[in-house]
Amino acid sequence: MAFTPACSAGDEDPFPDPDLAVVEANPDGVPYPTDHIGGTKRRGTRRGDRMPNFTFRAYRNGRAGGLETVSLSEYFDPGQKRHKVLHLQVAATWCSICSSELEATVSVAKQLEERGIRFLEVIVSGKTAGKGPSLAEVDAWIDRHGTNFPTGIDVAARRLGALGVSGTAMPHDILIDTRTMEILDSSVGAPVDVGKYVLEALRFVEDNPPSY
Image (cartoon, rainbow, N blue to C red; front, side, top):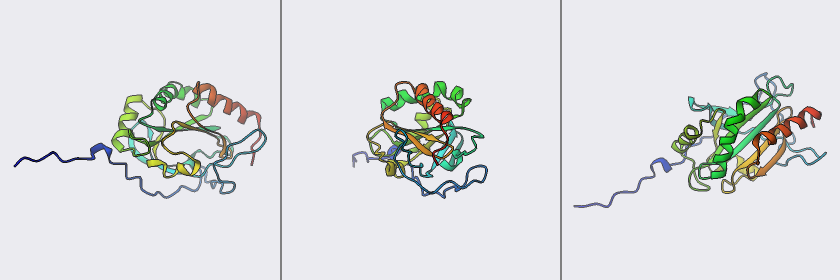
């Protein structure tokens, strides 16, 4: 008896993306701020909201070491001991612009990290907009681009959706002042020049006192 081959989700199965315990304090033991949490970016002299303390399963450096838990509290650095600005890149593996932005960022990441800038990419969708990603899609994405900074997973933007990230309009870039975790910019679409984009944020942080 002949059978029609069965359908199989295979690599299309989304990463399970479990709920995770949030790391409440930064590496120095300072609690992450819990006031003024939101998604509104700074506009002129009006300060922005603080970034929620999202927590992801993530690869810290390429895929070496496997998946770990990464909370944004790790980047909270009120004394600027380790860094000054966090660039959060939200991407989808179907998005060619996301791919181009990642390539540009990989080429300058190490140099800019020496200036106090940190990068974190979070993938919210696989090759179908608004769905996934699967772990296989994330692995292939990292390997293809040679990603040299942390990559987190947020299936269908179940966390970042609170900030208006849909997974269908990509990429989404967020700049954060790590002294206060204030959102300096939150924009859909890749910057023309990634280096210039993050260095403008760094200059702002160096020239202005904390807003909280």
